[in-house]
Image (cartoon, rainbow, N blue to C red):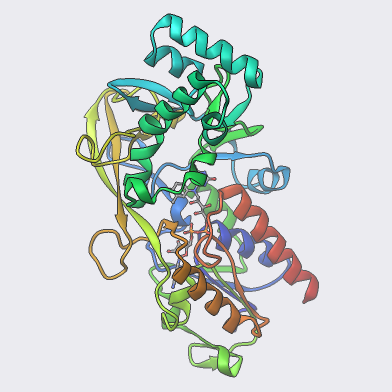
Length: 390
Ligand SMILES: Cc1cc2nc3c(=O)[nH]c(=O)nc-3n(C[C@H](O)[C@H](O)[C@H](O)COP(=O)(O)OP(=O)(O)OC[C@H]3O[C@@H](n4cnc5c(N)ncnc54)[C@H](O)[C@@H]3O)c2cc1C
């Protein structure tokens, strides 16, 4: 029997919308090219009994009651507050840079003076962008801003995005905050939890519905043809008039006709170590490439509920330029918004616009960064809208 909807991808975008459509009585087929569900949130217990996140550490944090409520139907949660340390001049300091960081890198008197200056200028627990600090009338505050830019931001950004120091847009520093206080949590959302048995287990429950058929190891474009000029979709060679929710790369959907979209990729060097490797889940290395050619190290068991004691698994993260044809760096992680890339993406969207049954959804298809809660919200909205109009 023909499905009512075809969904490409079994990540958050695909799985959440599939569940809602199925609960609305629609038959859904999901094509997933990877051998597993859960998209980039895929996790599993590895040989060390560590819950490893295959595509980098994923922490669920939200202030959206809607996303939390929906996902809570498929999992219990445990509390987890993410903390990040940065390797600065041989010491580990909280990131974002806060009063503890100041006290770790400066001698006592100077640290106290800087803290009082910050408190006076901005007030307790304020998050102040470096750009603002850099413009402050007090030269000591400006000097602090330069120190933080140099030791926390500059080299990390160069490594992460492949920039030279000159190419870093000063406006980007606006995003790097300094905290006038001691809160060392990386996120401040009211709901910060991890799924009790991992993300993959949560997806298994979400996709466990009689009207959802998940086909793993299946490249969607081997079954689906989207023909914008003819305003037609073919499914296995036959006319398909149901809904298509596409959560893969927009350029791939149309055979790269307007060029490849630009991305940054990552490679993870995964290692087994004894006991505990580092004090928190993530340690950043905002040091020059010659010193540390990687950006960060993640120790997965530090965010696990019942971690194993003897062994640990760490992942050392190396950024790469993305190229789908290359052996390394062929997974698209972060969009890189060059002018050419933005124009290509707009061309893909424009040509698909008349196709009212083809929907681009998710971090790849919409060519943007989405947190897991935000894509959950967006998928709920799209799927509920489709049910309403059916
Ligand atoms: C390194 C990293 C860390 C992150 N950490 C966090 C975090 O801590 N907290 C947070 O909230 N968010 C985090 N995110 C964001 C999170 O990964 C996204 O919100 C989420 O993955 C978006 O889900 P999605 O369904 O849009 O995309 P994806 O998870 O990428 O799912 C898309 C799926 O479609 C499949 N697919 C694509 N094309 C095809 C095709 N042609 N045929 C068949 N299948 C196809 C893919 O295989 C994939 O499984 C992080 C992202 C990255 C890159």
